[in-house]
Image 1 (tube, one colour):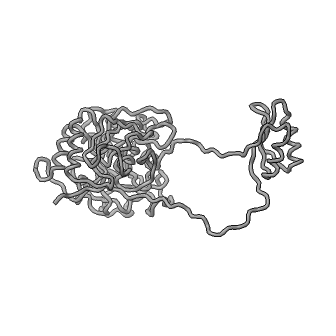
Image 2: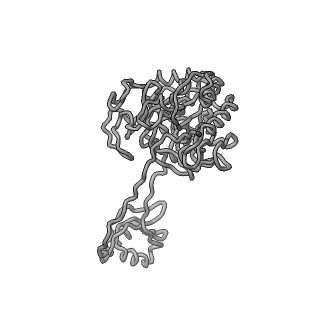
Image 3: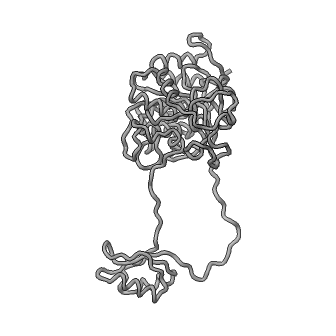
Length: 405
């Protein structure tokens, strides 16, 4: 029987507000904000004062240098009449602008990535010189907020491209390496080269054989790819490398021996990770999920996209001795297919935080072995979160912290 793997995630839901039914009569006269531009040479303060008296306008700013004019709140009728004044060049409605700023997701804040001397998050597009494979549903190949290495794309699933038809892989890629470019979001290792390895179809599922195809491809490029993220999982258990009992495990063993650090999701079944692969494999870095709603320790923040308790292990997260580290995985905002952005939850979202951390470490320790990368991440971790609240295994895993990476 062919076994399948599914993406280890919980889908975020956006609910649109609906307008109340019924209608009320519009007021006889509405009041709006306007900008009145006067002809060159006009005395703006005196004309503004005159208009205020004559038309009941409430003056805001008065302009005398870049242009002559003023802003005011007035009735639509008053604005129409003012436009006929020979001293007025034109009248326009005031508008609203918002800052086109980059968002720092809560998970990036919680891991203290902004303090990392390697990440250098400062709004300037400086890119971490590292290569990370995203073994997933593909990646949006032309997302403007990602440094996708399209020449390194590989499709082991349906279709003819490694382009992402699901969104999950693109979300993972953004957490790992979204650009530090003052727009969209920023990742843990900003600008890391993302190798899209598509092993899941548009529905987010795939076979063990497709996963092995992806691992095989990454291993063929082990001299170029430092880190691989696998935010996916299926039923299974651990076996020793070389036991010839589990083809996917054998493939990962060889890939890790070739120098690639694998980071994987623990799974979302509220179960022991020992019952799920690749989470159960000793050679990978298995990541459980923390519920964090404000990017800060201490707890008490209100839940946002889903119900959970701030600063505790996520209520869906797998657990157990196979978990190596914890990272934020609830209500994570990141890149999405179609050049978009989305908020979703899962250990799938926790894993790429750690993959990004592994990438930062490899950028400054290029000869570090996968086991050395795991040890460094664990050593730098913190226990500054609420425990044992909701944690069924009695083991307090380290929480990812990258301030010194």
